[in-house]
Image 1 (cartoon, rainbow, N blue to C red):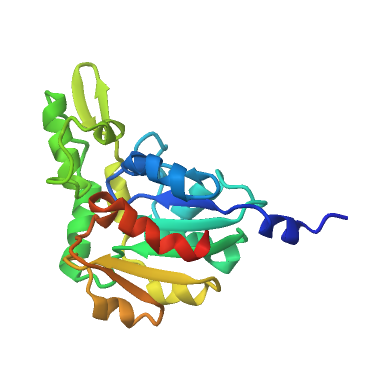
Image 2 (cartoon, helix red, strand yellow):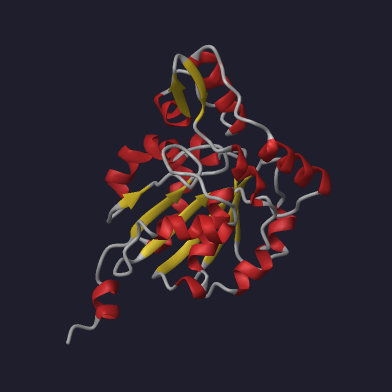
Length: 248
């Protein structure tokens, strides 16, 4: 009989890269040359449900988003999950013991830990809005960059932007299902309590969405990346990828 646990431990880990709200898996494409040189195993960067080419969900929750990601993962793989913002929370949900997946570690970058009622109300309002149509790709691309938090970091004609847009009958829209904004506030203490693998929470030094103090209250290791903002994985891929070094 083959010891599957031992066989799995002998395999290189699979790096699962999860994007943030409004973005797509293509935000990780600039990492490809770095990953080819540095990561020993396979890697994948799926679109979260309701983003990019991934179909929407009838209702959004972190568990439902994680379940959709899990369908693309093999129970025989060792998984290291690196998620940005929303993707970091989904990574924690993947690692929860009830999920049954072989997750070795989770790195959550830029997870917003504290939400005000005004912020939650704004998210609900965004979720209820109809799809906005644009007359040109440039207009849609600029909206996509604002919604995904990538404005000022990528140009509207950057290849990464393409996955976030759709053209229908000569008009343009964002690929994202607005309903995804209704996912709500994560219960981070509960997610961490349900996770028995190493977790590292990280943030860019200038990230306005979360503070070091807020992360440290959660009782897990915290890393601060000097000089970087909320989208640190776009600003300095090597610095963020280095966070996964202990889990290669």
